[in-house]
Amino acid sequence: MKKTISTPEYADLVAWLKDARLALGLSMRDLAERLEEPHSFVQKVEIMEKRLDVYEYAVYCKALQIDPRDGFVFFR
Image (cartoon, rainbow, N blue to C red; front, side):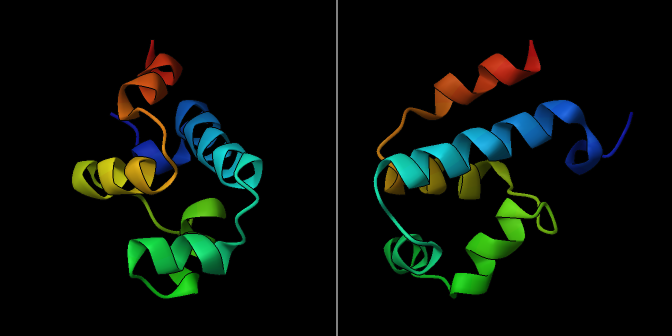
């Protein structure tokens, strides 16, 4: 099995998360504040340097006001 962070599906998921952030008009710093993380956390996720685990993904989605289940479409 390939490392998930290097798959096109994961790249699409990250792009979806970034688009959701931008649609809310949030900067990386704004989202990081919602997540109670340093802004570098959001940056590393968006440049695919950091892979989100399941819990982090759920919290990230909640901060973006999106349903985490919607992201699974990228893995079908």
